[in-house]
Image 1 (cartoon, rainbow, N blue to C red):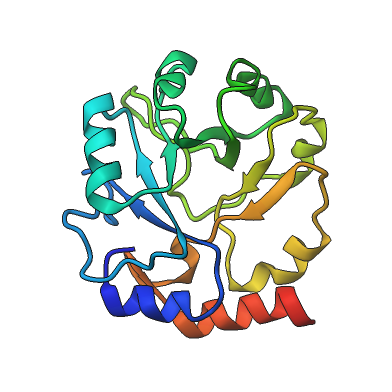
Image 2 (image 1 turned 180 degrees about the horizontal axis):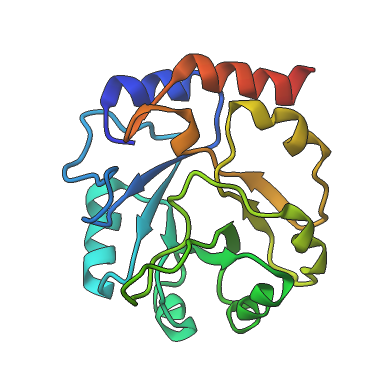
Amino acid sequence: MRDAQNIRDVEALGIDWIGMIFWPKSKRYVAEVPSYLPEHLKKVGVFVDSTLDDILQHISDYQLDIIQLHGQESPDFAKALKPHTIIKAFNIEKADDLLQTEKYEGIADYFLFDTRKPPREVGGWLPPGGTGEKFDWSVLTAYQGKTPFLLSGGIGPEDAESVKSFHHPRCFGIDLNSRFESEPGFKDINQLKTFINKLRYE
């Protein structure tokens, strides 16, 4: 998020965390500090293979509480960011993809499971997510790790019932992003409000 009024409107819905993306190639890239950042909400900074110094500078500038590593960051790199709270994101398509979480156990505070992007015609790694598409959540029954996780990957306004029916002892929360936007980086408040009310009260 990057618009001050939009942040205020989302804050009023009683959400827990807000995210800011610091990957310059993203349509949601946050280039400057919003004029309003709520003190009582956790602020998550999303990074893709950034340098340690760059992340530490953003922590200071944006009052970040949580660091989300969305690239190919090693366990040692994540460990270097402690004692900050760390989320490590992973591409998930099949159960075997969950094996990559094992070397981050005890380092990351949370995992985030997102949709694997299809390979590009020309090779090259792509960060998790950003497709607006869901993956088969049933593969997460194979996850036996101790680290709690966030469910992500194309969750949209029509998915409230599916989210309510998803159960896993390590599922900590859900990540709502592109499917709730009126434009990149700007949340549709009415859609979010309706979705959250369905989760909480229906």
